[in-house]
Image 1 (cartoon, rainbow, N blue to C red):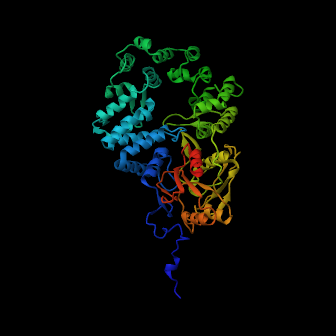
Image 2 (image 1 turned 45 degrees about the vertical axis):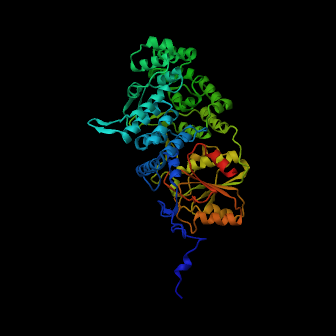
Image 3 (image 1 turned 30 degrees about the horizontal axis):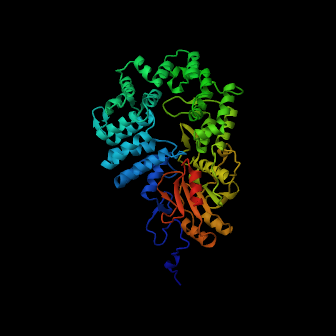
Length: 557
């Protein structure tokens, strides 16, 4: 008897290389399997959080950039005000949700260039909240030139309408005059993403903001060059401190203004920042975030050395739980700092020389303690969780995608990043979590609540294909009851005989109908194993710095 072709159609077990019966909303992923297209707003959120960090095993970074920018433009056309509100919420969240501000600034620039009147009004109000530094303002301005400028004989010129002028002007009007002066003095000029010079004096000329006080009028005049240094320093303490710092000509003088005038490191001449004794003084006065970011520089110039007093004081600050809480240092910040510092080399600009240093063991140890302390008062969900880390070949940075880089330093493969996140969850949830690796079969994971984060650098994924139905199949066969699943992946599943949604449905029918699922994608490639119709499934960007809190809240709910 001839085989009935209709017998191969099953809503219970469908090969992942085929669509689920009746589900026309599934799309083919880059590995040839079928998943669900994220809705427009999920993709916008992924872009705002992740940007285009590094590409994937299957898709080049250039294509990812074009795809995600197109998604953003589509969202602005549909509801630009919502895009702006989402950008502000992500940018200002505490703990922070973005590793970099650039995608958010790009979104605001796109809102100005392509949005309607209401969108531009929302973006104008949002700009001072998102562009908090000169670098942020320069980045926004550079993106806007590309998106809303006009071609000229010398390149591209911005089209500065009234709304944009008002928005840029609000940057100079938000905060007290001395607060703004402090921001100005920290950086009066920066580069746009295109590499062009961006000076606050030029921004002031474009915006023409109206001063609301004599002090602010003095500040504007000083920026423009029409008010003398002596007049400005008499009215604005920040300018006085800045000019005092800029006048130093020796490391000894620099140390004196740091200790007596408490000037920030950004006020000092660049030549002073190569002296070990200057950074020795800054160890006690620099902000916590700046301290963490400058550990490599302090080491390379010779301030942080084994057994030095500066190292002892830096370690004391890095392990001060109250100070870390006040500075809102997130575990992800500490982990990234640990990985960057441990590499011993960085090259943020490919055209600039490589900077190298020999990591100092007490600093590395202190950063591990910073990581642990940064969890602060995070409470476990109290739920039983299965964490599945995709360990397939596409998660290994050697197969075309490259490794993940931060500030010009290579910090690891997508697999390593996923394992680090699994460790974070294990630390929070303690005994209520079980971690597995998944490719085309299930493997035991090395992750434990006490995993030393330095260990992960030597771990390798098992390789092979990807079957993301396995976490649910495995849990069903093991007769284990979990309240939630967390899957770290690039979503390039294709190898299974059943779709993840089918095996999840089986698990819910046989073990726990209320089981919730978080799918954390490490690359914004536009598809997911998470069914958008499933209210018990959450798709999030895997590099979200507040990931543990999001998982906690969703699973607990």
